[in-house]
Length: 289
Image (cartoon, rainbow, N blue to C red; front, side, top):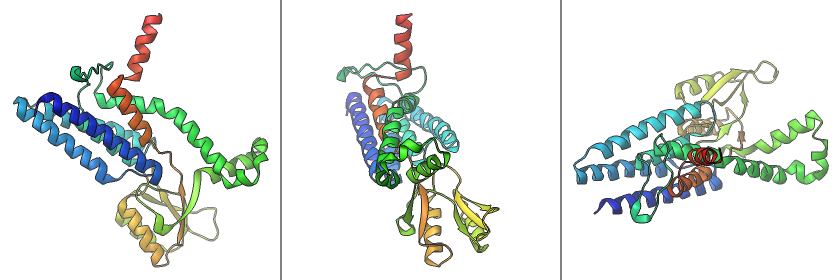
């Protein structure tokens, strides 16, 4: 197997997996761990093969370094609530497969490379291309909102702060059966009185946090997701068990999160065939000046 063939396989597999991730994110609002971890392990294995063929450790070493750096940086952005845990894993997997900038002469692909690793170009591209999709996504949510469907003139009254709050809340949140809850869902305030729930959530050590309900006379406590990463698999199992045992109700409120994987997929394609958008814009600005 030649270097060119293996490089081509790496590119095609990464694009295929990113498209599959985008489909899952749009349809089910999450990216399966099996998909991202499979891509990550493929990256380690393929770069290990490259190192063996070339008798040069740089391929597997660059793969591991790129994986760790990308994970650390995207994890920090996850903690800042910029995107979900599935997106972090997808970025990390892409970085593991393609640690270097692409310059593939046999495909006539000569994208404009950046001064930072290829994975960071994918991150930058994804963020930049996400804005028009985010706007379209918000418009779509508003249009399909039941409040808007029932009262089309509702938007005219948005200068009323209460109307605006109601539209935002009903657009960006929905109530689902607890049985339909899955990993990555961002749980809104779920109220309860039984202090045993506090112990269960603390022992789980997931992405749920318990708070005292100061202004609600009926309930003493509530729990919710701590970050945009949503609940973990352990959190999901715990909530379903608590619902089945009657500690909480059989329905729960979750936030409607923006599916970011399609933007990652498009950002990857741009990075592969054209390069880093920031570098392209900088180059064009320099030419104009």
